[in-house]
Length: 583
Image 1 (cartoon, rainbow, N blue to C red):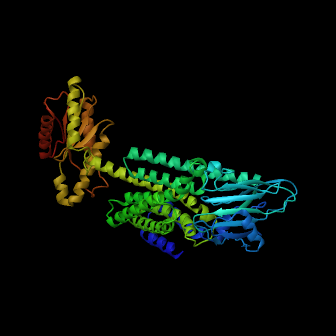
Image 2 (cartoon, rainbow, N blue to C red):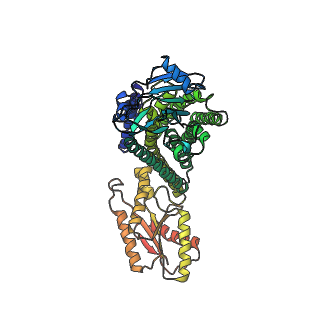
Image 3 (cartoon, rainbow, N blue to C red):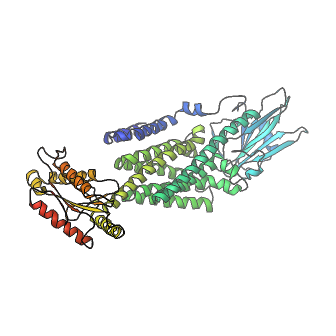
């Protein structure tokens, strides 16, 4: 896998952050899945265990009826003339159109009546007919497949299956007739009834858990979209929901439970829903990168979404046969675009982008095999049947984490922008507008309780001296340190703000005695004179404090601030006194 190795080296060389260790680990895991998923040993390991008669197809023979109109008697004559060839589960058979395949099955001999289940594990098979010899010498016929409503199948299951009882001494062969819309390789599994039921329970449990995961993700995305006011969660919820229905349709669970009485939609959904999911995937990725300065990506993904929408409409209105060959290249091109955009996004925003890239690689690892199978490039295997479900199941939580991180960063940015309207950007204290609002509230409160509330105006008297001696940066750090000193003497519920001319305003709305106010002012002055690590050695803050104690003798906020400014200006002009009450 040189391509994935190169991608990993590219990311590793440009991303160096301890906080990204976990998502990078998941990305490495996704790369390993990509490299291992194609190994035959993995497919063999994931296949069904060899128990009982599971998977036995030795001795079966097949004839091809290109007209699709031959009867069982005519086919029996062809078998008798030796026209049949040995059947192979790995060979792609020339189905499509009216062509029918006839398989001659020699079921194993038994000593007692044995209930069996013959399954054709290919969801979406158009038509499957089983002909069994009857006790009176006639033939018993059963029919299954997408041309028939699932509710009318002889055994309602994920894919065509037939219940039968093999009797002792039965030597006559059974015959399986198969029709499909495009060339496929056909295999069947012969179970004893008990093993089939156990397997059915496991598959329904796993698919049910997958459906529950999807429902939970859709609920979480809906709540997140509403609470964070971020529409991308709606895009992801729609994408996950449609992809899930598409996967459940491909596995047969949707036909078994959601639309068992609609054979047309059961056959069409397995084509329409995956294409629609790819369309929503392009829209989701476009919403993810829009506004990031990559117009080429947004336009390309919008173009791919439009092409996919046209393809889905063609499947709905015209049918499968003329357009099925186009779907494979469309999916492959979509995956290439997904991967390219995810790599670019991971380069630009690695904290979120690596999670997105891991999710894309996971679904790519699982989905490439069904696509290659539909294009007749690889034989049928576990990964060609269920790889897409595994990939999507891994992708869902990875992209959900990516969306959470993205929305949290977006919310934090919005909070910072909102705070700029309320907070002084240099010191972190409340800005002038908030100071005026709090003073208005204090004056209104004093009308009810004249003894409540104190206002302190604090000025850094030697700010110009610090700037001239140490420079602008140290002067700004001195202002930050002054704000910290005031915050340290303030109590819970007090307001520390900054006037637009640079002075600090400390507003106390509780009842405080004159002695307590004086002590607070002295502690504040002492903190400014103490050495600080933020300032150069020898640099101290000469804080001048003007105090307005109740009852205020000025009317209005502007008059109060002007009176305090006059007092603090007089204090700054003299080097001795640093604290004075407003007369």
